[in-house]
Image (cartoon, rainbow, N blue to C red; front, top):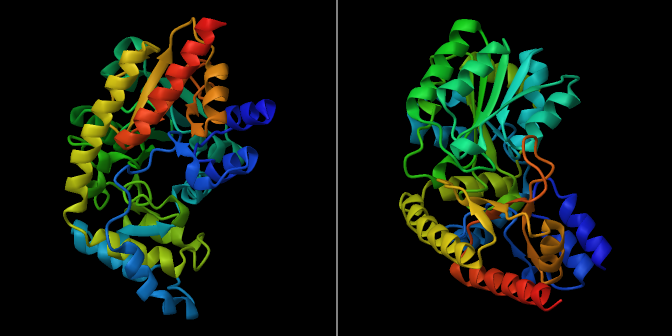
Length: 371
């Protein structure tokens, strides 16, 4: 059991292996506490279950070929025309599409970063360069970071705002400098805004896609609306680029339930306000509980997850394995470029789950002390 548990935790590049963990532990999946995937701790908007049940008969027909109703809703909410948007079954398929369609040859990833940027580039025969933010700066992107990016002479730059897994937002002035530099050099700028809806001060580049042909913005709906099982996201870019990408996208990429759920969730005006308030409170509670355990250094985060560097006296694999056997999943970051063994990412979860996590870690520490 321990060997299997350790393997699934350390091999998990994405988090969210709830069903796999439940099979190994021989328990209902609902018993698993998942701190490895950063999903809205508030849960889906109220009324969604009833809405989907009443919308069940839509399954009797094929879904919209290009999720047209969803693009119309996005256009209504953003003030951009519908041809700026390309919905997808999560951002990952679109990430894998971009290197080929954009014909990039010298991509740079600003990291530490989501592993799928590199995976998508490698799948397309490319070897990305990394430019890393520094732990000394609490992982903030600073002007020197951009200088190092430009020295690589990239034709494509990948980054996330807020950064994943560090949770740091990119200041407005540095974002705009990246936009202007990519325009000047003709480089593509691919900005992953999967978690920006969880931040209070994050500046989205979405309004710029109409006039910045080299800008691509990726947005997730499943994270903010707590629907990862439906796989729902969209890409925003200049209409000419969206048309090129749409040609390479398979029809019926989104199921009818995913489209319906997206339309329902996007109509809930107050939901994000409630989310911001809840995430802020739950994050504060998580930080307080972890700080009391004195596990190591907690880095500042503006997102719905926290980066923890364990103190050298702790064995991260032993902690992860122990928690796994308790049905608690954490994100091991040792496989991330620029990080190493001992770095963990913890999702912001409801207070009751954080209490359970804290209790399990306390048990582990007591057990280690007694041994």
